[in-house]
Image 1 (cartoon, rainbow, N blue to C red):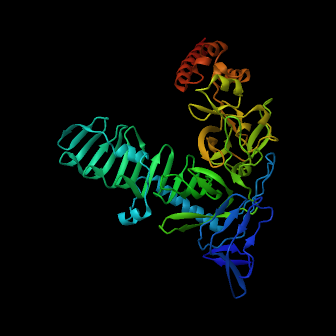
Image 2: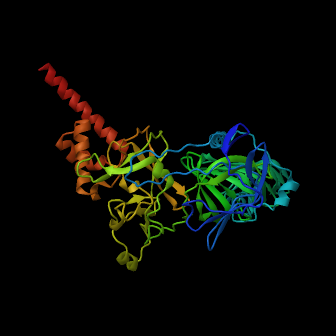
Image 3: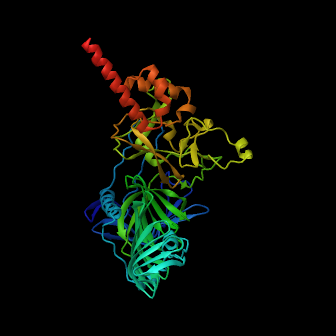
Length: 533
């Protein structure tokens, strides 16, 4: 049945108050069942269904519950999950409510990114009632609430033994009034001090990196109320010991609850960069535990007046859990495809002769969007014991550096889609003229992993290429040959040039540009001399 609600068209499931509260989606979430309490009213032969208490998805060992918000749900969206070899675009018809909610969320996230956007702090009484953050090892507490003794005190400034420094109002040789404090790690804190202790609204900024900043409220060496911070590549905004949002690198979003130690625990949501496709479920100590797949259907205000997303499970959702990839394992559900990849990419024979399979765009993909993901076994590049060296297989040609200490790798036995398709990034072929780049990101199923990000707009059907970035001296022969061919065909380098400079400039852009400029100048001079003669 169709009815208009707040200018959006919804399809409702009609029923009565005597109906069972149990409802299972056809071909739904494996052993999960939807438990709802319905309050139904019928007016002018129009039946509507409204959830008035918690909606939960339960397996044998876990229940994931949505908040008890009065929200009208449309007919569940179904996204057909096709074979990685299927190049037909997935037909997805988003409701007007989803489109509207995504628009609201995008505006909110833009304001989050802007550190100049107004920042309001609740009354301290309300903050204290909330409990605040009880974690003395939080970076703000450790940096700002120094226990170091003064080494030098003079009018309006104090130097401390650990290298920290204060400049501002003072009373009896201590910080008192407005001032700025520089921690031993050169993070500047601007705010108000009372009897040597920070109190009230503060702004902090990393003097070495102005892109790292924070607003927060502090009293008695505890953090209360609202905060907003940019650390690393993630923007976080929320309430200590309450709800929060995090914008992850490349546009994905986390929403959830912070516990008293500042960790994400309880019910939470991960929204892919398109801001409508979601993974929802239970988190504990910043780690996703288990949940399902869904779609954003509404944005509402909670008891704090804070925005929160309402997620409706997909009609054909799958159980999603943290895969726990490790040194010896890619994860638990190797055949469970990522939803975003299923919508955006497909596997086919590469256009590169002899390269085998490649990855292609199933739809048009905009510049700077995540195209696909690359999960792998975790291999540490240092601190290996002799015993571990014997256990660990040598890195394959699929190895990618995740950090300075850890690489991701796909063992040979899992290269085939028949054995592994949880992520498809390993199917992308190499090119020295790539259209995507490697970058790091967070994914609830895999934790910290690699993603491939479009360097330009990609067209439907276009093959995806990335520069593998091997160390040329240790690279496979095919890679070395391609590098030589690239220098010769794209820049006109001679065999002599390649032998003399090719290896040394491979990993250094500045060195390559310098050498190439000299070679081009020489080639142009030779061409001019030839024309004159």
